[in-house]
Length: 204
Image 1 (cartoon, rainbow, N blue to C red):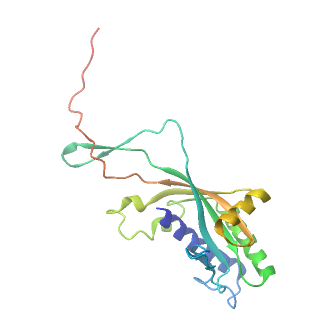
Image 2 (image 1 turned 180 degrees about the vertical axis):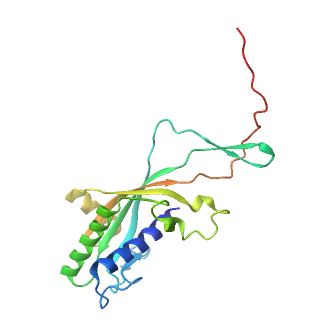
Image 3 (image 1 turned 120 degrees about the vertical axis):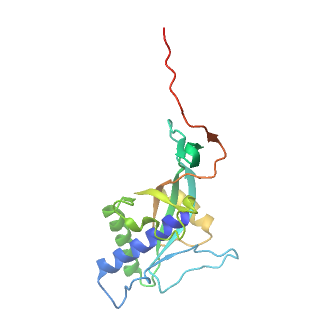
């Protein structure tokens, strides 16, 4: 599900920047936005200088809300499965503008901010390709997502220093977004409920 979300955002952001810049010499579809860790396990920097933007997941939190209820899903023989409610996650996603020309990098970062200003929420009604990367949605529904929403996450200088220290790299012009993701639920529950066959009426 995390992969589904970030692959979707990579493709949408890539297409948005290509259309916005309208510069075929420097911006071509599939060659603007990358999705990967910028630091390899051995500590080496892992950036493609031919790309403009790299997306990297840097943190995950669970969004806990009161009042979530289990789902009842019908199965064969009129039975039901009792499923836990969907998981709602907050993912911290870093967008780094690292093209060699600094002024171009700043313009690229402005394009990222413009993209999320114009597209703060993503769902399948408005974006049918939201789950396009899931090859077997019926067999692997846990890879699906229902909705994504984004907001810019402000960092103090101290927090930025801690973040880049954790990544083991030097500061790159970047923007950190908190991505709220509502996912579908697991369908492997073993708790089966019998169907309701009659209604009892209490008499006083």
